[in-house]
Image (cartoon, rainbow, N blue to C red; front, side):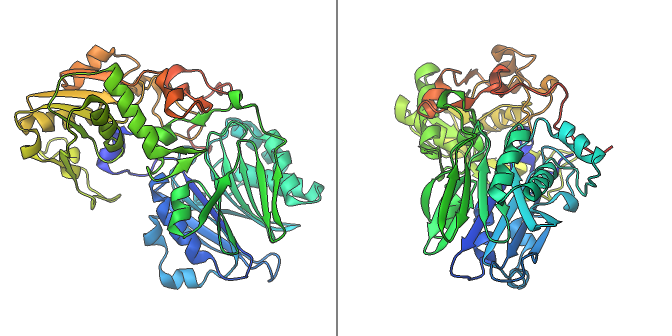
Length: 479
């Protein structure tokens, strides 16, 4: 199902996807801006990417687009971008959690129908996609992909035939779809953003001169020189036109029912992003501070597993007074085509990705901070690397609670029996990974970490904001 990932990330939750949209009211081409926006969102998906653009003053059904497997700078070059002419468009970077990893499933999806053309970019997972897809099949729909995003695109197109405008079609589609989604939709004359009522996935609005943007994260707005305007609220539909931004909040829920993915703040989002008013870096610092308060231990140095463990390690050091240090050098040139060592060889995937600075940890009691332990297949190697480098003790602290349940909303978490915390106690995990002690972030700290925002803790508790599907819908839809 999934594209090969870099060796170090194989014991991390799978990335989600990233969406980016732009509308230049002055009529200038925006393909390069979308490119840079997607480049800034590359951490959200490294399998495939695509850009679709249209000219709001040109032929109504004409869309220039290109998408393919690979990283943004592999798929697009200057020549290819110069062929994409249009002042309105959407882009997407993908990591699959449902549907096969191939070019056909790359986004944005382009739908040609009686009212014109739609381009749809989707981040998330629908929990009722299988049922909706079957209904569409029996009404004559022919699917070109195996992803739930195509179901969304079909319903928007079908509803548009019965409605007076595309934003009403999006609203009617939201009445039918369930689960997690952030959408960037390009119609011939409008750019539309929509977010599921629970707010699982982030989406925000930016502005640069007379160009408006939609983005999964604020870091992409910074990359294109845009100012942050505001977040799209959970359940809100925003319609961007030269006449202004229209807002439809008819699907919004009370704040206490919202369920943002907490892993945006723990791991997924870039630390320089802000999501729903919370700075991601500050949230990770706070998680580290909580670990120091709740799971303290005597040590000589605090270090983080690059990159997502670093901010929490700094927070732990600030709270505890124990010095923060850099213990690992990361090889940033290990890419998606990395050839993993055979089990019989002496080489370790993690050792190729990371190397320990011996002088930093030798004869020291080390507190090692990471964001999560999923299967536990790399934590033991990292602990062993520190001890091989001369660390006297390694005390591991995790800036999230133990993973105990799968995710159905767009995170690629393994089946429950593959989660090390499902069938091991904390002490057993500690022994398994070779650490001297092990501590996790307490569950009740999560709301504090995000200033009381409504969050989803389903992967830790099994209590999801909406009922989990009876069948595992995370696989492919292919028959």
